[in-house]
Each structure stands twice: as C-alpha cells, then as structure tokens.
Image (cartoon, rainbow, N blue to C red; front, side):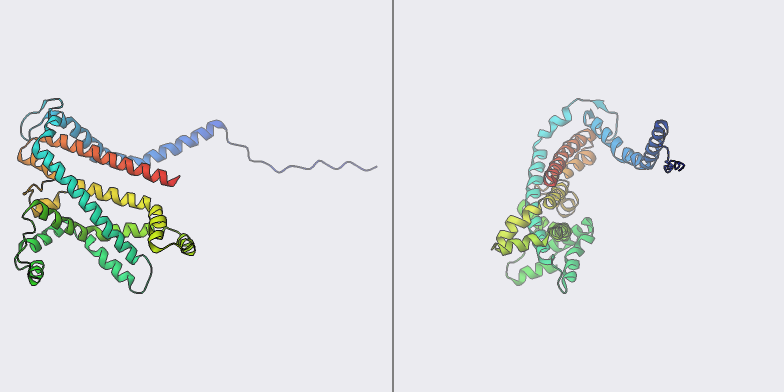
Length: 308
C-alpha cells in the first residue's frame, strides 16, 4: 500500500503592512518633506511674500518717505495717467521692442554660426560669451567713456571715416540706438548659449530628411528648425522682455533719464527717492509686476502647448 505524499509547502509570504502602518509611513515622509522645504519656504516668505504684501499695502496709501502714512484708496493708481509716467512707459516699450528684436537676431545668428563642432569653434563661443561675464553697471560705465570721451577709440574710428563728432547720447533716438548696441554686446553671448542649447536638442535626422526631400537651407530653417526651437525662443523672448521692461542701470548711468530716456524703473526711483512718495512708487511697481506676470503666464502656456 502506497502512503500518500505530504502536501507541498508554499513559501512563506511577507505579510502586507497594516493600513495604520502605511498611513504612519506616509505621514512621516510628509513631515520629512516639509522639514526639508521649511528653510526655503521661510526664505521666500521673508524675501518675497512679505515685501510683496507690504508693497501692495503701500500702493493704496499715501506713504511719504518721512512721516506718517494714510489710506488714499486708488489715488496712487489714478496718478499713473501722469504725462511723465506715460512718456516713461512709451520709451520703455520702444526700448523693449527694439532691444528684443535686435538682440534676438544677433544671438540667433551667432548660435547658428557656432552650433556645429568644428576646429576652433570653441574659441569663438568663448569670445562671444565673454561680455556676459561683465556686470551691467561696469559695462554701462565702460560705454559711457566710449560715448562721451572725444579721444575714445569709438570716436577715433568715427572720425577716421570722416563722420565728425557724433553725439551718441544727445537725443532720445541716439541714446536708444547707443544703449541697444551696448546691451546687444553685453547679452548676445548669453542668449546665444540658450539658443545653441535648443539647436542641439533638435534631432539631426530631421534636417537630413528635409535635405533628402529637396528642401533648401532657408526652407529647413523656416519649416524645421524654427518650429522645433519655439519653446527655446519663447524662453529667450520672455527673459529679454523682462530684462528690458526692468531696465535701469544702463539709462541711469548713460543718460540719467535725460532727453526723455527715463524708463519705468527710473520713474519708480524718482518717485520713491526724489519726490519721496513711496505710495505712488509702489503703485507703479505693482502695475509693472502685473505686466511681468502676464508675460510669464503666456510663456508657460506656450511651453505646455509645445510639450503636448
């Protein structure tokens, strides 16, 4: 008689953690994450949230630099219709439009020039990027000497071509053109690096396929490169727009706001420290912040649309 074989033993299994234990682990991880984020949250609150709230509160008060404050509703915002402020807005918009276009074209041209790895291309990349290492205030002082000194190398070159003495900063248009040239020299290498990164992210197979289909260089640039580079262009455009709308150092050093070259930020400085009206300066700051938020929201929507 054959005895029945014993039943096979199944391998021991690890019991699943109880729901209470899982909830405890999640709670511990949440607390640990909050602990890690706490220093940055405190820093953001102290350096951004609290000053922002104070600025909004100041914008609805008559707030002299010296003396007691008093609520005045939206009077500070109504003062934004002042002709001096409107001229500052118009000049800032002109400067932003000209600088964004010129700087974008020059930076994109440099990026196309040095995007491929060829012998010696690294030297040109370094040369183009080096001006970005110079501070904006230092750059403005350097060009102030070039524009205002009769014996400066710039004026010597101009006289060598028989053009005579040029008043680089003597009018609104000349100051706008001179400052745009300075800003292009200072920032072209920085935006070149951003655009070159976007160009390197494009699959070369797409360009090769377009060439096989008989597309010209212009068609490849217009139909392949630019559409794929759209998120990078949006980022560069928003950075340029933001920097131009907040322009201060260059015009404060080069012209001091003369010849109708005062920007919105220079108007904020004048209201706060010359007119000693912090309330109106805060109102202008809030309006400027609202414009910057709209630009950044537009950028995020564009990036999300391209990412789908």
